[in-house]
Figure 1 (cartoon, helix red, strand yellow):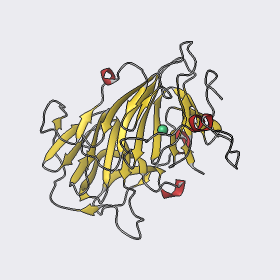
Figure 2 (cartoon, rainbow, N blue to C red):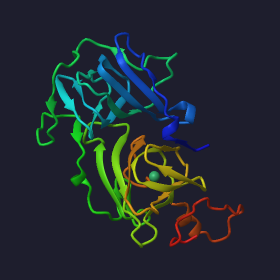
Figure 3 (cartoon, rainbow, N blue to C red):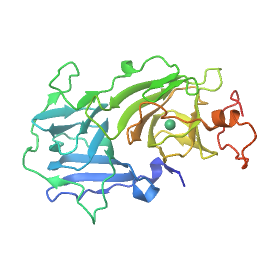
Figure 4 (cartoon, rainbow, N blue to C red):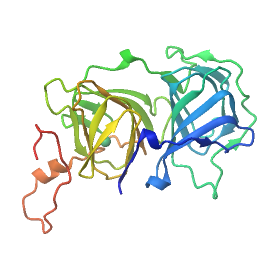
Amino acid sequence: MSYAIIHAKDQVFHPVTELVDIQGVTTASLIGPEQGSVHLEIALVEIAPGGVMPGHIHPFEESFFVLAGRALFALNETSYLMNPQDFGVAPISAPHAWHNPFDKPLRMYQVRGPQPRLNNLMPSAYAVNTVAVPKDGRAINEFDPTCRYVGHFSETDMPHPGPLSMPGYHGHNIRDISIRMMVDDILGAQHHTLFVVEFAANSGTPGRAARTHYHPFEEAYYFLSGSATAFLDGEQHPIEAGDLVWSSTNGTHGYINQGDVPVRFIECQAPKPPSSHAFFFPDDWHAFSDGMHKIEAKSDARFGPDEKQ
Ligand SMILES: [Fe+2]
């Protein structure tokens, strides 16, 4: 199987035991080797009131997007107050720690890349005392050049919907889309990306969609609001807010928003896309067929009602 769908109702939290002194931290594993991934580990993480994740480092990048609640995040020499829709990345070997001194749990969407090695081969977190458990933190200010590896997503950040333009692809096969990059090489990540995607509502113009395509990297989409029809390896699936879809390298995927409200999700890619030829659309290649190939391959790409078949 080159894709996985993890529905919200199937996301079960378990205590995190990566470090000896962890208190009040739980995680719901969403994507990893069990689902077929070789580049990613994705989870929801909760830090309960009073919860602490003491100082540690990883041999991988760890990015996050705060879904609800507040907590303090110490990274290198700076501590930040993380609020809903804040995001950040702990680069490889950067010491960091978490503390929730507030009265509500913090919930965040967490992505690790490159994929951690199996626990029986290598620990995923190494305790360090070069960063203390934070007792306070500064608010994120993206205009402050000393505010590094973190940022904040605002509703006003979303550009008007249009054709997709991002590293590795520009064109009309994916349209009526808005993207707000969060985690990339500018923020400090080398191995994966994290960004907000929104497809416009279907306001009478059909085909507000990403035509079916595949990549030389893995992608995952955590749906925040709205609903969509996903086309995964030629099969259709309804996707709702709270669901996560993962697509492997070369796994075909496409989305249509047939609802009357925008659909929004957090997307990640790992490894980072190449600067060109990052997207491949099977129907475009079939359209160029001269009929001379020995195997009459059938495209597994399928689109909305206004798209060519
Ligand atoms: Fe894609």
